Image 1: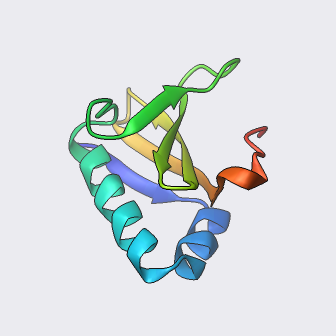
Image 2: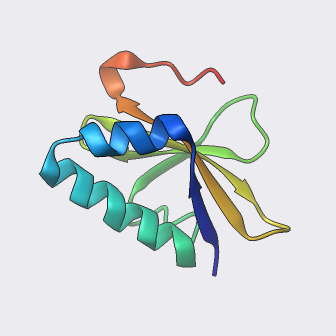
Image 3: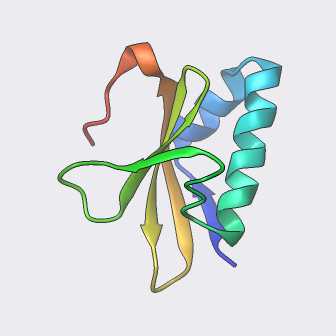
Length: 89
């Protein structure tokens, strides 16, 4: 099982999400704990130019996260609207 860590920016964004979207985001993050790449359940894609960084889509929002396979840890870098496409780290 993987451990989930949220950056300060991700925590702030999660708090500011609409309740319905926040519930979906939390459900997705809990799914990542057991399977960091649940591709069938969520629209997950690897970010180009990054080794273990992925984005998960929930409605118009994106969750960008890193996977540390050795330590079984997932760090959520950011949660933002698709319109605000700023995936560059």
